Amino acid sequence: MVSKLKSIKVPPSKEELNNRLEKVRSLMHRENLDYYISFDPVNIYYLTNFANNVHERPFILVIEKEGPPKMVVPLLEKSHVETRALCDLEFFSYYEFPAPKGENWFDQYQKLIKNNKKVGIESAMPMGIAEKTPGIKIIMDIIDEVRIIKTDYEVGRSVHACKVINKGHKEVLKMCRPGVLEFALYQKVTGLMTSKIIQDIPGANFMVCKTTAAVWPPSFSHDPHIIPKIFAEMENGGPHVSIVSAQVDGYGVEIERTFFLGEIPQEAKKPFEIMYQARDLAYNLLKPGENMGEIDKKVKKFIKNNGYGDYIIHRTGHGLGITGHEAPFLAEGYDRQLEPNMLISVEPGIYIPGLGGFRHSDTVLITEDGYIKLSKAPEKLDELIIEL
View 1 (cartoon, rainbow, N blue to C red):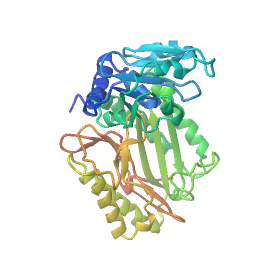
View 2: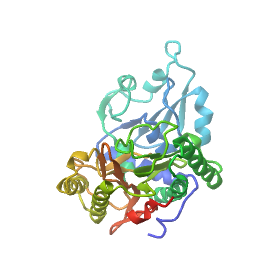
View 3: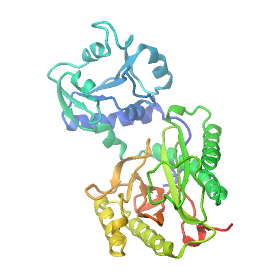
View 4: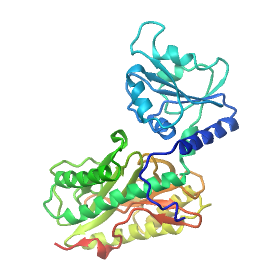
């Protein structure tokens, strides 16, 4: 376990990427696929270390049963891919889009796939690309499946990413006082985290670096996905809900806390305590072999039994990895067992209009016999009433 918790800041080795590819091919073999096609930039990044944005010039990765994957790329971007990709790739470039007849991306792409072969495609693949894909197409998310169980390298990258958000969240609690503007918090804390990323990883790829730091004051903390106005002010009392997250050179993590400025309103004490106990219940259930859907069901039942069932608006948790939201899910209906090296958030919440939101969230690693919290911040109520 010590090696798993080592902070890693270097890019993946060719061996790491080759091992990921072989896991994909193992699932291809199980499903009797001749090809697997990836368009999702997240999945392409996972297998190659190359990140791209979706636009009218597509990047398409073609994986066969053996040999280097084939990458269909715009000529304009070929050197970009060669610079960032850390695995063996065979390139097939097209000049431009739109292009004259016979010179479009799909003319190049269709030559790489034999007719009447079984071809796996991602469920998120755009219809326009799916329609241009030859063969007998079968929708299945093989790369997404491989991503669910983290390698020790990925865990190490997430350990480092949590050091970034831990520093950011500490600054949030230090800065947050009544009257402080949302924009001031965002500017200072995201700048702090970005500076740490640059200091720790001078060669970081900023296509896969993002930082977020915000606080929802009690006037709208009951609405967790609202976008706050940049001049919104922090308020006396609470509940305030902090949201600090980052994608650190390709690895996404988060930390969130409910806290109070100066005092806690009497009516906020019980929902905070029920949220905290629901969170404890979730942690007590985090063991390999436990059903994730059942964990969510039990946590929600606890909240309902304590009178706050009408104020539950989301699941208990979600996966983290090279993004900030991905499989697996602590969600009713997701009947999959926890396994070591899964990386998840734990964040049961209660949201009461007119009072506010109550949610803690952490980045959590599932281990052989339980879990380890990789993110760190105050948790108990008496630690989260900030003196003015």
